[in-house]
Amino acid sequence: MQDIYPRFYHGFRCIANRCEDSCCKDWDIDVDSETEKFYNTVQGPLGEKLRSLTVTDEYGERIFRSGNGRCPFWNDEMLCDIYIGIGEEHLSRTCANFPRVHIDYGDFREHLLSFACPEAARFMLRAGADAYEDFGGDYELSVSEDSDDGMSFLLKARERTAAFLLNREEPFAYRLADCLEFNAQVQSLLRGGEPRPLDCKGAGENGCGFIFDMHLGFEIMSETWRTALARTARKAEELKITEDFARDFEKFALYYIYRYYLEAINSGDVLYSIQRIVCAYLVTGKMDADFAAQGYPLSRMRILQRYSKEVEHSYDNTEALNAAFDADSRFSPENLIAMLESITEM
Image 1 (cartoon, rainbow, N blue to C red):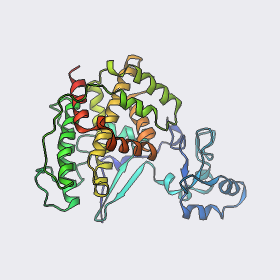
Image 2: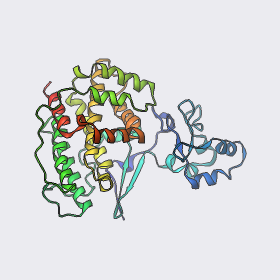
Image 3: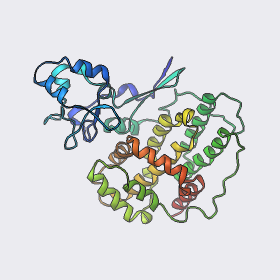
Image 4: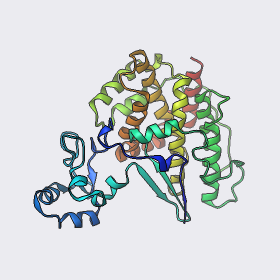
């Protein structure tokens, strides 16, 4: 098994109670069966609390249910009572691993950090363009080259997609449009068809309001996020996404490609990951423009990090996006490309 890491991965360290948006906040905490088995042996008040607060959620998973937006073991000093009481080695797998992500593809395993962690987000925003240089795939892919096995083909397509994102000779919105165009052709091949040029005439004329409407209908944890999202939605069409923002968003887009693109080996759909990036770009880019005018009440890093926490890390929200991509023609590559090209010309 080959283990692959981005260049910044091993430098990450949790900053505990210095974190501005702890992973102990907002989320219910998964408790794996092996950890729960140990918790059942812990004596004293901590053991009683561990057992009384471990419940089964609506999906049949064992969790610590958050109360008032916080893990019940996250104390007033913003430190973990489990860590303090019985040691780091007895944290649940979720707590011990986050924000580290391990994705096993059989012959190789990719290791990443999640953008939902502020400190991990800082690491990724500081990273150079070569951060994912050790990840597999040959850049030179012809979309007519369909003889490779599935994973090899997807690895090549992923590297070509990353190359489009890093083509700094173009405005970033055009780079995203190139990613959509290319992956629409890749998708045709995956479905056994022939690549075809996209006809974007007449598309993208209704603006991006429907994307904000969808996000406002999502499950939202933070009222601060809801308020900011609603405020941005009201003026979204007049807000211009800057290339300064795009330089940071490029890092988010690369993270997303390396985290999710290869899901297509199971889903058969490479466009999902690109469409989700486009939605994230429009929502966070417009929010950044609004916040810039206010003197940044929430930093750019926090905008991207919070989007990851609210949308990317919600199974229900992600599934709602994928369902919309399948059913709503406004999320078609043609419409999104036309929208991206129009906002670049503003």
